[in-house]
Image (cartoon, rainbow, N blue to C red):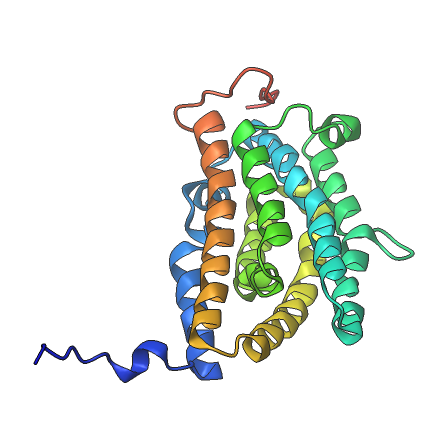
Length: 252
């Protein structure tokens, strides 16, 4: 008679809502980009004006792809109620009657001293930033709808980071104080978006394997956010080697 190997009952047990939430929170605590050295320098007031310009210019590419990401998710669902709820995100970014998140980001970039056309052209992006953002769109387009929605759950952690960032930008970079509308709006938008996405993912991840698929999608999103800051840090902080064609700092 062969040796019987006991498999723990918990290995395939579906996590409760509280356990699933705790699992996601642990990913955020470990992997979300609030811990990245570039953000730590920002929050300590140690970035130069030129480094802030590089951040605003490169981050615009990510911001410009967020509504595209949400449009992809909308196109993949045949659930009318889901689409009605999700399209709010498009309006938040593209704007309703007033300025949306994308316009607010451009105003922030302009406040750093950059020309609008220079930012929107995306001609001076770091290759690493472009690659990471494009990989995020590919994840949303090629993965399952569950993975696509789960990847947005970085919003579970965003509000805490935004609150810290707002305080830091106001204290250390006073010339940006009147151009922080993007972050001010996200303080209320992100928690609402995150709650809807979490509830949807928990309801549709009906097996432990599906829960783990959602966990991996969130992990992947955190990695892609981290990779963007890796590119910024390497090019503009240490060792400070921007590649050919990338943005060159005008102020330091």
